[in-house]
Structures are given as C-alpha cells and as structure tokens.
Image (cartoon, rainbow, N blue to C red; front, side, top):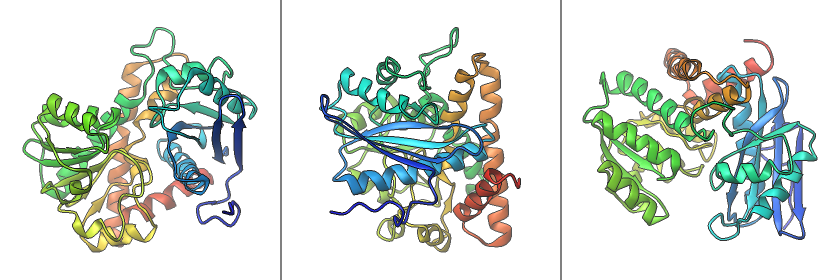
Length: 351
C-alpha cells in the first residue's frame, strides 16, 4: 500500500501533515494542519479503529479542512487542524497513550491545539496536558462544567434544526416533527434530549447497541438498526456519528426533507451536495451547524468564560445558516457549495 499526500484528493493545500509513532505505547497518530491564516489551528483528536493508514489520512485531511471552514464562518480567530489516533477507544486507550499524543502535539510548538472528539474524553485531554500546554476543551477557572464542548455542539445543531424546520416544514416549533438521529454518542444523545423536550418524534440508531438503548430510555426514541435509519419516516435526518454517510446509495433512501446534524464531513463526495439538491432535500452544511463546540472552546480559552456571550454566539449559527440558505435558493446552487465559497472568502480576507 502506498500513501499519497500531495496527490491525495483531500489534500487541499494543507500547511502541514505529521505522522506520529511512539514505540513504548504503540501510538499511531496523524495530525493535519489545514490553515493558520486566521490563527493557530484548533481541532479535536479522534480515536477510531481505521481499516488502514489511508483511511486515517483521508479522514484527518477532510476533518482539518472542515475545521478551517467552521472557524471562519463562526468568525473565530483560529485556523483548522485535526488529529486522529488509530485504535479502538474502548480497548486500546491508556493514560500513557494520551501522554504520548500530548508529546506529538507539543512538538508542533503551538501550531496545533488539541481538544476532544469522537473516542476522546475530557479526561484524555487532561492526560495529554501532562505533556503539552497546547490543549483546549478544558474548563476555564470558575467556568461551569468540565469544558466538554458536546453540550454547546448539540445546542447549536438544535438551533439550526429549528431554522430548517421553519423554512422547509413551515413549523414554528419542533413539536410533532419526526427526527431520525444517526449516532447515540455524547452529542447525539444531548440533541435527542433537546428534541424530546420540544415534543419531537424520535428514531435513534448506533453501531454500539447499548448506546442507542440508553438514549431511547432517556428520550422515548424508537431504536432502529444502524442501516435502517435512512429509511425512518422522519421529516429530518440528523447524522451525528461518522462522516461520509450521504452518498449515491443512501440519499435515494432518505424519507426526510431536511438533513441537519452534528457529524463532520457528512457528504461522501462533493457531488453528493448536488444529489441532495436534485432530490429536493435541504442540506444544512455540517461545519456551519456543528460549530457550537469550537465556539464554547474559544470562550474557555479566553480565560474569561461568559455563558451569556457563549449563548449569544451560538445564536449566530442559525443566522449564518439562513444567509447561506437564502443565497443557495436565489442562485439555485447546492448549500454546501455556497458555504464552502463563503468560508474560503473569509479565510482569504475577502469577507
């Protein structure tokens, strides 16, 4: 197997890509820095049992680019980066492994700031912090909670979902609206809680069955097998797990008229943006609606955490989304294409 970086279809002029290995702990990690034009790159560390190094490289390149675009449209003074650890977080994780990851981050001298992501917890980031000061996703002194950005991510997605429901379904609330949630991790479960309190009808799936069952018990959702979530008779489909779930095979199966969820890189291919438009499905660009987490992290890192300022910044998510939807409709263009163009303009200093 030959790894290609510069010729990789997801390369997109990344500034730096680092492959990290630690013999003592068995750490196998990749760190991708897409852009530092607006500030140091920031993004979570994901731990996942990738099939091979090529799959891990593809994921980290896509994720880091998405972080650049996310920070730009959230109007944050930071660039985009991401890291991945190859391994099963339920079986392969240890404090020593996390400290080894911290040493990899430290070697970059602050160009990359690490935080939580799928498979990585606040406790894991604390372990990384034993080896580097370039961490985020931890609570600022005196701030509520432990710094986990998941609640803010879920709230931002919920606000974006309200915006989409009003525009597409003509609904002034989510009462009675059906939502199919793919993924019962931290964010998916928190989103389900918001929706249950709003009176939505819920379907939930997860490759880890106990997670789906626990979410269902807490929210009243109906559990469906992972592959059946696309067929759920819901008005809204909410991808909240891994990426690349919207593709030529799954889009025709969707019963939903709206896609809005927390997962990164939901489109498997750029042309899937057009497929959704042609199918009459409104796609809320993922890095626009899931920006709540990095917004929350920004205020923790500022050293003066203000919950009111965080809520006000979260409220800009549906406002930004509405502008993108208006432009896409006026120009008959896919929403993801419009969002990408706007993000690139912000990074270039043109907007």
